[in-house]
Length: 272
Length: 251
Image 1 (cartoon, one colour):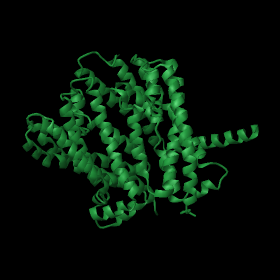
Image 2: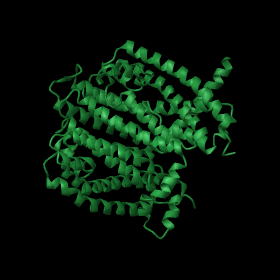
Image 3: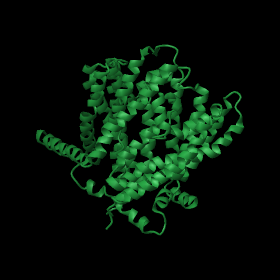
């Protein structure tokens, strides 16, 4: 048992390292992804919040002052970069639709596991590099930030990332049946863009939708971790986030196992 | 081109219909953002919620035209460079920039153009005293907006010829484009000047929206006419420059 875990760990660590090395191969590309893009997003969102407060009649919105929203805009751009999967989902779909998955399914490892470890490796290095920016900016501009809460917030975001990968796995399994499905990824990620709270804090939504959206597992991607760091959200809600992601993981993994088996049954092995 | 593209697009029907859904989610995201923000403020920039809806309607219409005619072609430049497909285009007796820019149309998104246009007319109906004759400005301004988007996106896409792999520079384009998805009046005067001249993403939607919503300001309305030939010339120069760095992938 102990030995098999060591083998499993070593194997997955190798996949994660592979992701780090292959992403750092084109460094300009990589640094644009982890630094330039979120910095630009932050800039755009901060300008929006300045304009919103300029037109607002009061100095607070939903009980929070402008600095809270600037802090939210700063952190949410970086968390959103971590909590989304574009590149690996496209790769997974391509493996299935082009038939190159043949070389993976004959190896002693799972397709899900292979890409999960790579995604985690990629996101780990991205977090290490990109999080320096909001930490320095929040400190320098004295924006409302609970620095001691950052580790738990990142942990929740990474836990949510497993859910994101599971959804990517489901989407890639659809490629067994539909062949060309890249637009599924775009549609799904746009939907998550709304549901995670990247666009605006979810607690600004009026009525029952607010509670519903916050209770969904997707809020664990951006709203809950960023809200926790910036003081909008307290620990019980973060724990609820862990619980709701766990439920979603159980359901989607069961669905994924069934969908994968069904996909393999119908798979003709195009690349063979 | 449209007929051939339509047949090719219909080959993968699930993908075809999901593309329409994708833009519907994008529209929802844009509308939801501003509707939620207007619950807490009267004005953003110079405009109230009714005027912002018109701005969004114009954004949807212009973006739908861009997605149908230009987007997919420019999105594929990076792949064409890496796979060596650009060689085939360069060998043809036709302007390679023209060929690579207008090879295929994304016909699935014609449905989105209908949705965007419907939203625009719905939002115009919510404006008191709107003179529909003002819509004639769009006949001139929407083509100008499309050229501005084309020129800027083309320069981002053509970097793939120089760097070989520049997918994230394409995502960077999306961020720059997002600046233009907000009204220019939201920004401070210096930044507003920059996005109307140096990085002219502000021209794309804000100027057509101003033509509809504000009293006529001929500086704003005719500026795109001057900008368009300049940008087209710059794209041509940049393409020629980028091709000097092209090392054929298929040879």
